[in-house]
Image 1 (cartoon, one colour):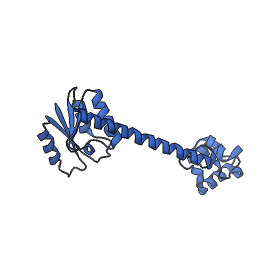
Image 2 (cartoon, rainbow, N blue to C red):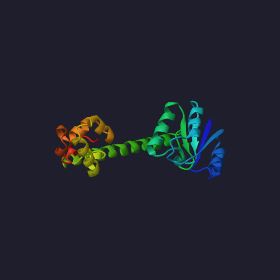
Image 3 (cartoon, rainbow, N blue to C red):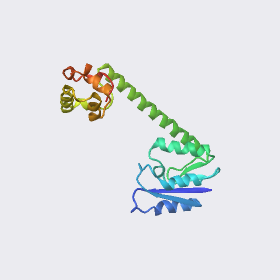
Image 4 (cartoon, rainbow, N blue to C red):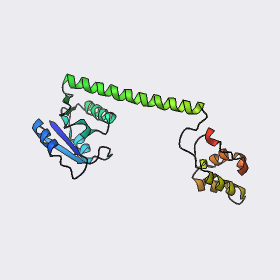
Length: 199
């Protein structure tokens, strides 16, 4: 059975052109979502995937109606393949029921993996460069803000305030307080905790 899936980005948009194309292709049932491309929740897509049975094919007017990005498209394609289902795009003329369609989809998968490898490589290079330059990696600590540092120093000078309460005030652990203020000494602060872990 050929099962259709259509999506428009807002409730006001009309999916009629997609529905007509899917009907003309021979879809026996069509599911339609009205949401943006980045929406995490697509109830009708979920329903369409659950409806499919081995030997069925999921048809879309265009791949951007189905997936948020290339990796998402590959994940859906792999899931369908593992269930014995196929994927058809009317606009891109890709049909994984055919050898040519399977080849193109395999190329898509290789491209997605290549892109992921490049991102990982760039991230690792950036981390190594930051570490070599003595820069901190990650989000800024609360104590990079001079005002927070001054407040913490004032609290540390007050012996009646427990270290745990100071840490709670800034949403950090007591270990972070010790790293920024060695020995709990407010005057030991020099703004150089960036060599350690972030708070």
